[in-house]
Length: 186
Image (cartoon, rainbow, N blue to C red):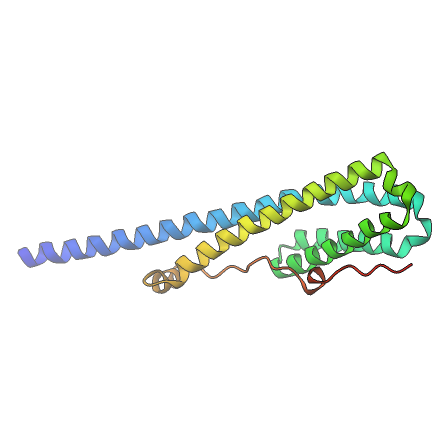
């Protein structure tokens, strides 16, 4: 009879441990999803600001249409990638958009009237604030991905987590274009 109680106790401890590991993974997975949602909110704000910024710049820099077209194309590609749900495609498109936005701010240096325009300055301030929030959201996301991936890779969670269908998440990394200075030629 004692052996039966010992076996029941061992099975109960194992079941409780599996439940605790599973709940911990779910908690971290939800944090990663929440962090991605925070990035999504800031990206939506950026998508909404970009057309206003481009229209303001168009009035001053009509012959810079290629730069403006590149910004619009990058915005549209980023929005399409976001809707597709493909994380890798979305990360790449967002990095491209960030790079093209740098070029539009560089244009303001060549046009003093544009640089002094209140509407442009306000849009630039809002977009800069949004970019800062996106960066903070990316750091928050990457911190949660790090915690989730670490939990998933350590023993004994690495054995049980894979069996329960959990897999590593990808970090939000800067693309090659974002690591370089923007080259502006006139």
